[in-house]
Image (spheres, helix red, strand yellow):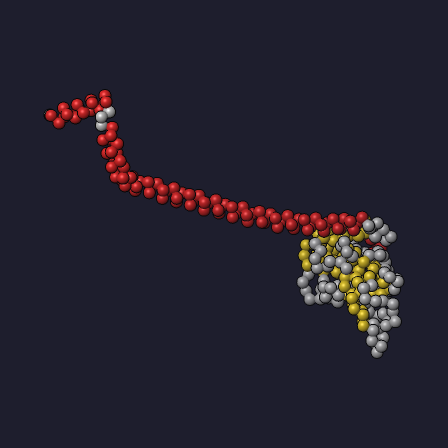
Length: 277
């Protein structure tokens, strides 16, 4: 009872005159380490929880950024592909402006991979007025001609096919010749020219207009090799096509203005035969 009365008395005195403030401050200083130790597990659990939460958030954000990077790379590759395609189409359009004949742009659908066979399938057919024997070009020169025809697609034989022949002339002097396909993707043979013929390496060969297939004046190939052996009746001459036969994805179909397609429409066998210069 006395202790209670003493406590009440001390509380009253402290309330009025703050006599116990120093004692309370000293006790709080002594009790603080104990409070810190007691609260340490709770604080540690909160820190660990926040750390795991932050790590999961970072992992999710990292995965999201990786996915975005992959998508952006794919889009960039597509844009680069579209840029290259746009450049090719621009070259074709620039080439078509130099051509007085009617032209149509076609796209490749397939490529024949048989040995010594150089044929492509394009997405234009008879419904687009395509006809047998019709010449194909790209921005760099002659590519080939149509040999099989369907309503919605057609097959073209490239000038490098082993069964193809095209009349040409040396652009420098008008010397006429025949360019034969070899089956190789980058080689044409120029046979039947005597060793005295005026032809040199680097000469540009263009279509002569003879044979009723290709209009005159289109680049065909550049002479790359000449062997003149006195023991042989003819020179051995090779040339490289100017057209990008192995890279082109688009082609120009040409309707010559000086001829009618009805006059040119013959069998595929006739379309690939060698014409006389």
